[in-house]
Amino acid sequence: MTLVGFVAVVLIGIAVLSILFAIERKKCPSCQRRAVAMRFTDGYSNGEINIVSFHCKQCREEFRTLNGGPLIPRHAFDLGAREPVPQARVVAR
Image (cartoon, rainbow, N blue to C red; front, side, top):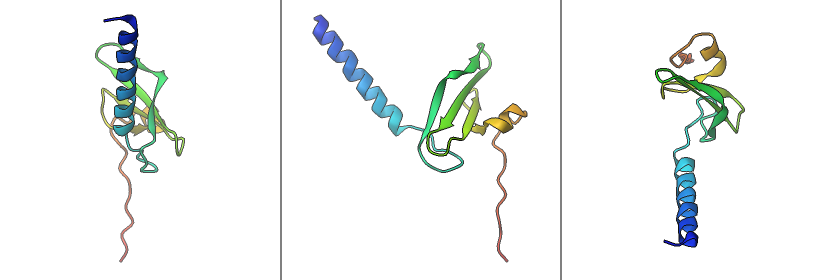
């Protein structure tokens, strides 16, 4: 394989992966849109614990996950929540 062929294969691979990531983008729990992106500058991993930070590009809410779990609002995660905070539902009589 020549260098040009190798570069072409790498570029096609990058394009396919970016399309797959766009399709599989997580839905924001706050605004219900598929605009949640991972923050590469924030997070922590030591083999057993893996904390990843996300942010919604639409409503600017920030989230964290623990070991690939559900999205938890950052302020709740920082206070110790490790599962999504239950939402209250208004029931009309």
